[in-house]
Image (cartoon, rainbow, N blue to C red; front, side, top):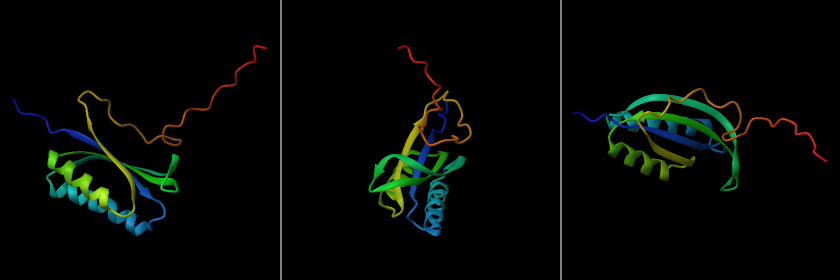
Length: 125
């Protein structure tokens, strides 16, 4: 029985201090690396500029991108290496999507990990 090609999620946080041309270049290089290693982009979402939960390298916000792709394991190694040394990349994370995981929906309306507004609580005192 043939094995299914694994699907991966790449969460890419780009520095907002990098100019727009550099950020576009990074995204283009990621897409080209995927294509060069016989990978396929299944989903690409731009989540825009969002505040970080905590400061990273004296940076308070980042441009978020989610790419879901399939491809061989060597592709993951190449992407990880390239993103680790690329100027303009604040953080990146590649995870293997487990079979049966629900598909990715629309980008979140608020900040990543933000909770919905709390309802008022009545005082017991």
